[in-house]
Image (cartoon, rainbow, N blue to C red):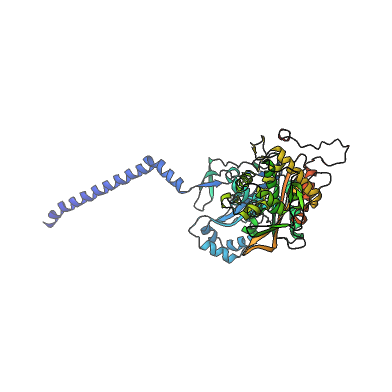
Length: 572
């Protein structure tokens, strides 16, 4: 009886189990068909994506060259060593071997990698010479790799340090022209897709996504030979006079091209570890100073151009001093009665102030603005400053007088050179530039050609018989002006700290070179511009004239040399 009752129950359970097993089998078969047939492409893609990486291909940064194509900055290939921490740490003895090869402490390397075990990419040493990285890779340590990069190299070192600036470890511009033209010089990195295995080793190159595009070269108007001359002579003068800082700018007045720009003290951009902000400062465009007596020619030029004076006009400077608003303006000596050329040759503060007071303050202000004072040049150098020239409505009578000999306003070395280029270029002002010009940039007339020529003759007299005899160059007519400005400090102007300046151009008959030399706080020997800065000008210009093969214009009669000034069209 029990046996008969149990058979139907058992039969029902058996059928249910069989059905469930059949359904499970159908599901498994269906899933297998889905994975191997319908989802096959998707799964393969997922597998590839999980082991696929996109690597960046470094781009070569463009070169910087001088006007003759000589290299000033170039990027050279280097390798950076990196590791995948987990497989590398699992390789017994790998840390010690790599640390020894790179001459770094094994303990610090191990700690660095242990702290970054969750990462797949950790730099160990960047920018090694390829031969060194090849030797390291030859050790065949697990998880050890090299990546090709580029390092910036500056063949001229500190000679062009502040001008060119430098790049960071990723070859991007940080200072100077490297920063100004970073977008031009920097290339566009490429991208390559690769397949890697579980050990992060590249097992297949899947091709480029984007080709690396090298940066474009940058050709400057700079002449590397003249740059070296300026650097050498400025540095020698800084040492001889134990000066604090200094700068020199040399440019072509015909087109505004900058041929040289140096600052001291300098730095070597090839040694990034030694770079400090103080040394990287391009003082020729950043440091402001009161121009002192180098401003007097512009006051005289303005007076001539307005028809208020003639070259033969005389000024009574006796007794060598006079007062304005209770303030005394004085000369070193009592120079008596002087014509305008004599005022510049003797550098008479009294004479220059009397000329300025004979003109309205607004005319002086407008004229100085026309020469470029109080505004930045068109150089585009990062961090350039435009100097200060207060509006004439803010001038007191004493400001009206002292502006005549360069007090109460400030300028930069480049700005002062640009202003002297106006006198050298027949009264026309052209923008300064770091690039060679195929066509002359538009000129703005500041004063008449006649007034510019008259002032140039006076400035020649300054060099022949005045305060700047040390600026003379045998065989050449030199026009220029000295400046010795007391530096302002707490409580007024110092009696011990001076700025020695000389500004001028050669050959005076057909000016081809304008230069300004600024030496700050000379403390050994003389401190006058004529004794400190003028000889530096003479040595730089003598070498530059020779290098540029510019013929003399002050040879004895009978040489057949023409001594007349050229027109702007001839200069172009």
